[in-house]
Amino acid sequence: MLSVTSVVKPAILYSALFRNPKTDMAKRKAKSASRTPPGKPIRKAWKFCPRCGVTATKTGRNPFSCTACGFTHYFAPVSAVGAIATDPEGQVLLLVRAKDPGKGMYGLPGGFVDAGETAEEALRREVLEEVQLSVTSYRYLVSYPNEYNFNGFVLPVTDMFFVIEVESFDSISLMDGEIDAWHFCHPTRRELNRMAFESNRKALEFFLASVER
Ligand SMILES: [Zn+2]
Image (tube, rainbow, N blue to C red; front, side):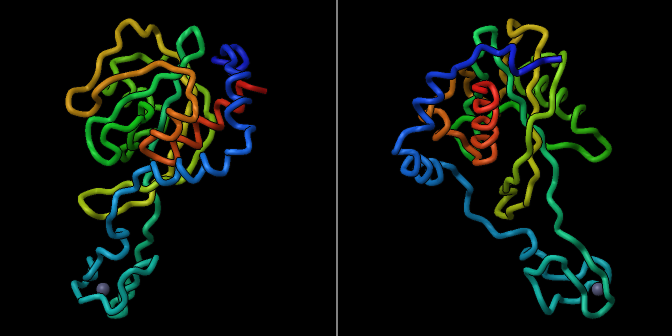
């Protein structure tokens, strides 16, 4: 199993970045830089009851509740996984997204958990699909809520992050159309401000703080 203490510590760099008086400004910048695309919350998309077909009298509520037949549906978050992989120098693998949301910005390897799949299986599958790397071990790190825009409707997501080890980085190869480039680095505020998702940025910050200790 991977122990974060075994990772090379970017401690000095991290301290310089996160303990300066400009932190608030950096936080505001990070917020404006993250791209949550415009869209309607999925709960507002439901105009009819899926059981009896009656036009909904109240839309946008969670749960959806049909006044005609009593059918109730909760708009619960879907599950997703993200991987933090470090090379022998402790540099983190970041991917440049080829598609919206967050086209051209950084992301972590990962994706949605399929129905009937465990989060761990999704982690292995997504890392293999996206960057052709075989996960040999993993350690659960942290989770953060996220939102994802599917064709104009925004779904709530629970992102679960794992620190992973891979067989070798030699086999790294990018999924066509999904990822434009990969980048190993000790993430600085520059990279953190360019993360496509706030949840990914927070997970990276959490990870960096854990290796600093
Ligand atoms: Zn109904």
